[in-house]
Amino acid sequence: MSLESLRKEIIYAGMQLKEYELITLTGGNVSGRDRETGLIAITPSGMEYNDLSTEDIVILDLEGKIIDGHRRPSSDLITHLQIYRAKLEINGIIHTHSTYASCFAVLNEKIPVASTTMANEVGGEVPVAPYAPVGSEELGDNIIKNIGKQKVVLLQSHGVLTYGKDVHRALIAAVMVEDAAKVYHLAKCIGNPVKLPEAEIKRANDLYQYAYGQN
Ligand SMILES: [Zn+2]
Image 1 (tube, rainbow, N blue to C red):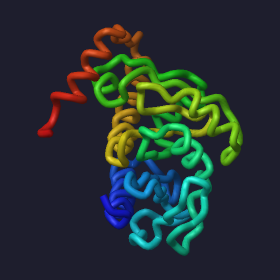
Image 2 (image 1 turned 180 degrees about the vertical axis):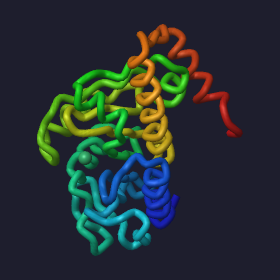
Image 3 (image 1 turned 180 degrees about the horizontal axis):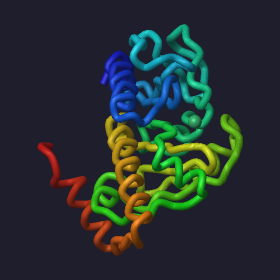
Image 4 (image 1 turned 90 degrees about the vertical axis):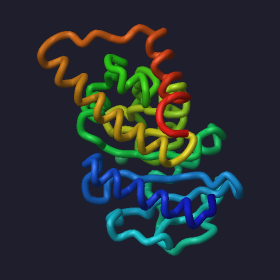
């Protein structure tokens, strides 16, 4: 994938986040790593996704030096770069304040796996990274410590961070965790949701990763 395609993929993901109502106004951000050059592409600070063209997506190296682009990068850039430096298998990151998942971040409460949707696309219980100020190294460290097999980490008192082997996978996780958090929340309102056993989470996740879809 060229840098131009990566920029297009990031804009597409941003518009999908709007479509699914996972972000409001200019909230949230999307980034991706170009596997050939190792460069990072990220959304600009404070711009509406619908107004973005490819040149608005900022290209940087892993240390944050701008290689191409005339916009100021997202204010969460430091966190994205920290994660890319620490986790070489991650090539796409999305941050939102999506309502239902963020409720659990505000409660400082994990989202357990109580539905196959969670098992399939989120891949496990969603932990909460302890609170630290936005843009601090501490926040990045707290997130990295909580990155596991699951594709989502909640940021205490703040929001949601999803990641994957590419931007598309991070987007699916962002959509699915909100869906699963909504179901879990509503189920909790009327009773006690039953958690899926660990072995079943693994089975459902493996099946979904390797056997679902056309590839
Ligand atoms: Zn945020």
